[in-house]
Length: 268
Image (cartoon, rainbow, N blue to C red):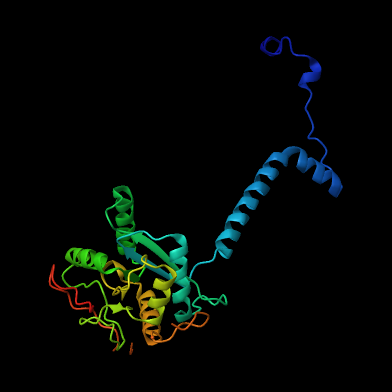
């Protein structure tokens, strides 16, 4: 009686046991069955794989420079002016990544306060590079060097130093051995002739010492030292491809900390 009450309104054919649908036997049938049930899952997976492949491809073929250099100056320079400096430095670099060409990327970080907003963003960029230790080679104009280097040294821990001594003997080397001033070099004359009254006669080349937040950047440090050493050694002769326009050219040691606010030691 209870069974009839529970099954009231249910048709007899609905109570018959259903059998599982017959699975396709042929490869084509199996494929059609799979495609019917999983078409959108498959398309979504293929799309995701394609996106990941493109991203991975971009990472693999993305070209990274052999050298990254920070140009710290009071004024901003145009892309053309920075490119010219890169080309002048390139003959003194090495093909570090083995791609068949020497590539030096110079990033201009304008630290003059003429444009307050630009100054604020650039000082943050400079500080980020110092914290990361990913750029070890710096080029300065004299005023920016005199303003910024003591400020950086002031923030360093007691046992750390900012700049390393350069392994060169050259008239353009500062008294403390940490700065190569390319004034009077063939490269300097080429650049100032290309851009009269834009680039200063004095550009100061330095390499950061691999201590403090730059620990672990020893290879970049050695590469920067070698680059400046070759640049100074070739200072009396224009690099190949430029018109001839005429200085003589120490394992690297930490640069002794300068007296705060004192003379930078750069020869004029």
